[in-house]
Image (tube, rainbow, N blue to C red):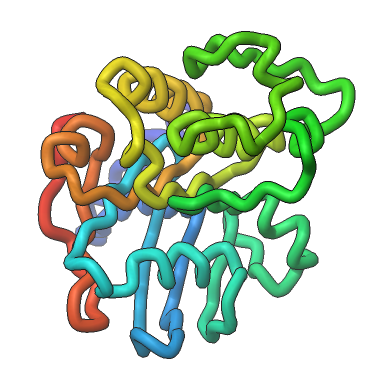
Amino acid sequence: MRGAFRRLVSFLRDNKAVLIVCRLKSVMLLEVRALQTEIFSHIDLELEASECVALTGPSGSGKTVLLRALADLDPNQGDVFLEGVSRQRFSPSIWRLKVAMVPAEPAWWGLRVRDHFPKDEVISMQLLGLPEKALDWEVARCSSGERQRLAILRALVRKPSVLLLDEPTANLDGSNRERVETLIASFRHAGGGVIWVTHDEVQAERVAQRRLQLEAGMLRETKKSAA
């Protein structure tokens, strides 16, 4: 064995060979190539597992449109991959479970909160400062802030890979904003990816590892955060 090793070393030295160590590129959690909608014509985006990206930009720049395109809720073109698998390989309903969007104004179709959660699923309302009896509330009696928090829980219990959040704390006070940020951080630390639309520069610095700005149909990275 030693003789073989010495011959190999001699061969490399004599032939001036160069060893190249190739690091395999890890598969991105979410990869977007040449995404097009009526507002923008070419968006490229990558999101790693356990990463939160803050998405900023002027009002009307298309941040919500971008999230809806990623969730395949509106017409769009381009290549989108989840862990290397093309979006075209998923049914629309399965894709939207795995790449889940929580809009700024969530939709509610049932009478009670419980109607919007999977049956027999254990839901910890206290994670977001809500009483356990909130499951039996009528949706109509919930404030906008309560609906926002419930919509986040509704998305999380379905175990998505990626969360698309459209200003999820806009209607929350400080303590409830902190609860949401803590819960989303836990999701991220468990391997989930997050794209978080916010107009709050301080929040973006706090929750995200990178910041992207969408303006005039162009998406560019503006800053790496310390989070």
